[in-house]
Amino acid sequence: MDFSNKFMVVTGTSKGIGRETVRTLAGMGYSVFACDCDKSEKLELEMSELAVANNVQIFPIYFDLKDDSQIRHGAEAIFSKKVHISGLVNVAGISHNSSFGMTTIDDFRRVFQINFFGHVYFTQLMMKMLTRTKNSSLVFVSSVSAMDGNAGQSAYSASKSALFGLSKTLSLEYAPMGVRVNCVAPGVIDTEMTRNLIPKDYEKLMSRVKMGRPGSPQEVAKLICFLLSDSSSYINGQIIRIDGLMQ
Image (cartoon, rainbow, N blue to C red; front, top):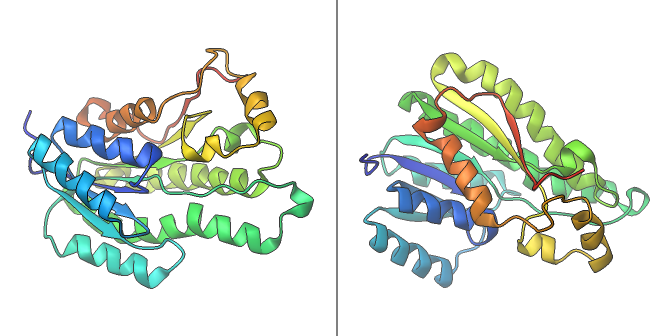
């Protein structure tokens, strides 16, 4: 199937799940707007090589989710290409590890700005493109912490939980306009964020994973790309765990 005229937008593409999502999409033949917060020669080179290897177009776009004007300029840079956008994946996010009593209100605001409010604004801007395309897909990347909680991550868990309510509501509002909205909730995934956990906290999390290993960013990316594709054309308004069976 020819996807050469289909463009996807992915945030948080310099590492982890975002990076692998771009790589997987390119391998499927999709062109991609690869969004990240900091301009990087390494990212530029990797995206260029990936585009050539898969005969697609990949455009790095840079903006900081803490800055509404940068978000708007990033969206305008995408609009300026005058192409149809078939999907958006909101991956970018930060964690914050401390007890609730030691987490300041400013910590909450910072985490929510990047994990929730920044994506809300960017999604509002991109929805104009998704509704024009029809038969398009929006995927939010949340976390099992939003469902189960995780001691020491009150700000992170709360911000990721907000994505559940948002995705459920948007799925209802935009289904008549041809936009599907789903949310992915990864468990323990082998990313930089997970590797930065205190060893005892990591071991505690892993003890809950019945498959006995962390997931890979590639495994999450495959699920995301399935939800973006026509293969999931009747899946809408869902929150899908990918966690190796955490209990």
